[in-house]
Length: 169
Image (cartoon, rainbow, N blue to C red; front, side):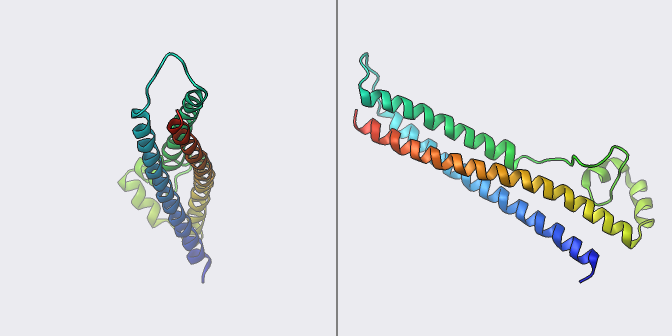
């Protein structure tokens, strides 16, 4: 396998991993929706009275914790994992033919001209630069997906405590 093929395969692999990360985040959002639905169903049965019992207080506390955690999970999943990102590691005067944002700003004639002047080493450099960019994005997405899954687990535990406490009122 040549260097260019290896670099391109590495880039494609990272792109695929980003797609899997986004799909996992979608699954986290789906489970979050189920948790929210269960929470709302059990909340409908609650009756507010002047005197709050111990279990009533625990229900309120676990309810607030559950809503807070699930809100944070949804925030992480949407705004830290799934949201599209632009490159951060290019200088203002750099224009690569392997990055869509640069292509969009170049114009058709400039793109054609730059493609005609490419040699194998320059192609490899473009692929490697973009591979670095997407790997940095994947690193951030992976950390935030891990965080959203951790808080999803805690929200499930909190939901179970909420359900148990609400049934003991």
